[in-house]
Picture 1: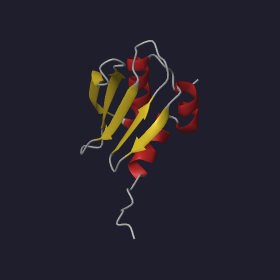
Picture 2 (picture 1 turned 60 degrees about the vertical axis):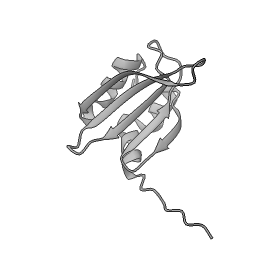
Picture 3 (picture 1 turned 120 degrees about the horizontal axis):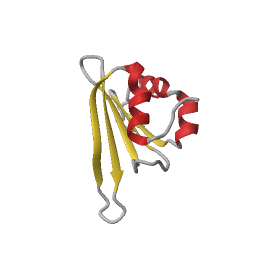
Amino acid sequence: MTNATATDLTVANTIRDQLGGNRFTAMTGAKMFVGDTNSLSFQIGRNPKGVTHVKVTLDADDTYTVEFFKFGRRSFELKTLASDSGVYADSLCSVFTAHTGLYTRL
């Protein structure tokens, strides 16, 4: 008998859809998606800016905070490269492209 509770992934799924859904995953090499009640984190493929991980968090004012990280192979730590707050849903793709160099749509 387990005492596990299911996490509501509605926000995480919405964030993924706003980024481009399956097309976003294919074009950026995104994988290892981890959702929470108000955020989505994932790992991305090689890119010109050296970003390895991204976290998108829904804020109380219905905007997003997008954080970009680089994983250190020697230090085994995530280093924050950039963080943008107050990002609207229609700007998620452009913010992602600006910080990674990867396009999310054709």
